Image (cartoon, rainbow, N blue to C red; front, side, top):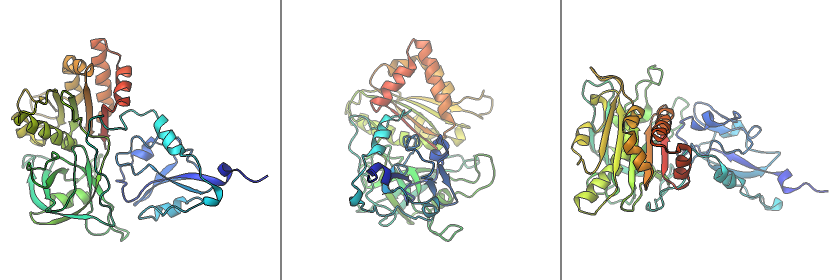
Amino acid sequence: MGASETEVLLKQHLIDPEVCIRCNTCEETCPIDAITHDDRNYVVDPSICNGCNACVPPCPTGSIDHWRTVLKVAPYSVEEQLQWDELPVPVELAAHGSLPDTAETNQQNAAASHSLQAPHSALQPHLHLHDLKNPLTVTVAGNFRLTDADAESDIRHIVLDFGNQIFPLLEGQSVGVIPPGVDALGKPHYLRMYSVASARDGEREGHNNFALTVKRVVSDHDGKPVHGVGSNYLCDLQKGDKVQITGPYGASFLMPNHAGSNLIMICTGTGAAPMRGMTEYRRRLQAKGAGVGGKMMLFFGARSSGELPYFGPLLKLPADLIDVHLAFSRAEDQARAYVQDKLRDAGASVAQLLQSDTYVYICGLKGMETGVMDAFQALCDEAGLNWPECHEKMVSEGRFHVETY
């Protein structure tokens, strides 16, 4: 008796090195340690991976969600994958038929903690118009320091101009930036992903440009000195410089388009970028008398007001547009406060919004997630709401979005 297709073939899980931003989320998430990495690539070990797909929902770029049908006796080895600069071209295995798309099935069945689909009324995003083989060249129109000159964090607002090139972006999407030069192995630097900080109609309304919020990285999470290749490259750009970008990326972290939808935005540091884009778009609609209708609440955390991007403009936004709650963890003469503390303080208002047409967006340091989720649980308990049921419903309806790093 001949071997069955499932005995002969393997649906091998692969990571796209062109799109991966090396955030380590997949390796941290994998419950069986099937994912490993070296100085260049993150890869999946075919001898360990069981196709559980636990790593797929948390991936911020979708680079983790790639599969190739291969012969079971000859999968792509870990050593091969570590040398890749791009995914291999799929090999036709028609003689053995095809396998069912178990990857898609597993992803749909995975217990996600945040929405994998966009809000029902979000505009259809344009995706992957340009890649590493065909990047788009844009021009620096401005580079402005947002944080105080004496602040420890150097955070920049960088405006890039498309000229007459077409590259449509929506609030919540990201672009890839290709730093020039090569790494220690002599290979081109892999791209760095940055969230768009401007509205869909341009950083300047009606202009073909966009903005990024970038923090210069000079130390790691343990305080050890490092030199962030992408961030230092961007922060040092001068007006008129040329930058190569890829994308757009992101099909779920998008804002609802229908009037009356409420937004709860929770962010730290440069996680403000997508929130800034959403807020600016709503502000423009309100200024035109477009009847936005929905409420906006923003919970924004930083060490002090001097290290808070967009601090000044935030205070000038109309009170009837947005309810702003600022959390400072190291401000002089103030008790330490974090976004989850401000969330609890505004618990009654937040709980009221959770019971209506509300969309939650969380962006910033990964360490904030646990505190924020605990705060939602606490404020819902106080209001007599079942948070697990509410959260599950929001996730399933595309109303609970998380992008942390």
